[in-house]
Length: 329
Image (cartoon, helix red, strand yellow):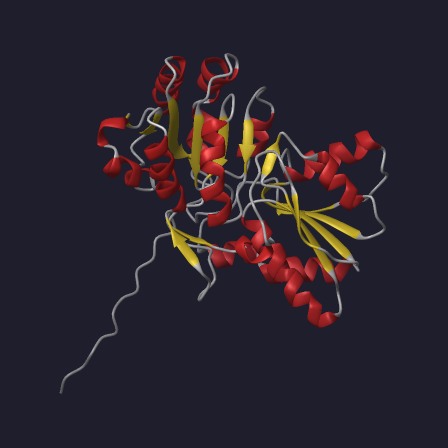
């Protein structure tokens, strides 16, 4: 008698995808966009702290081995070297995990890149809750850390469209930038909405009469999914995508919030110091007197586990967004 054993399924919490089954994707949009930009600008160089494969920088390294620098597991050296290259007129893109960039190398970035206003482009993998490996790798507070750094531009892209269009704009911008990287097979969402990325600009992706969601990063994808599903309940939801967190496009966002509609921010980041507090401070400064709800991660160290489970637990899943809206209408 012959018995067969089903193949063992293997998953990695480190590189797990939050993209839904059947969703359109593009593989490694950052790495390929950087190669395209580098073909047009020979000043672009790439660096990584022993994580090129996990930040899609390996694609650039294969295309331009003479312009790629592997710095080893030394994040302070990574960004110090990148700043030195920028001093000479090069345009470095330096990749590591967001937790290591924000927690380990802040002083080097602040004094070596931001204070002298150098074009150092920080590429941070695993931003927010995009890995199940627990607090050592979950950069749930990276924007809070970096928002306080003068001269630093912060970009939280939604999908492959954002990333592909952001890379050349980051290369051409003045001063340092921080890109919250989505890597591997990245969803393609915004091409259905006549959208183009503009550094420093928010965009109204979808109009709606009942609710307005101000979102960034992967949560714009979730906001759009929730808005589509809530149509079945006759709930009309607007979505405002804010890929640039700093400098913040207050004019576009506040114009959408200065209405009677129920309003929320949606972000893959702790409630502390990210999109919610950016929006809230702009609302207070303008004197709108508007209540804003926060759909975000809690102010705590998060659990390890499978991403779908974690997104449900911490309120980032599409169904969680829908339930929050319906509960408050």
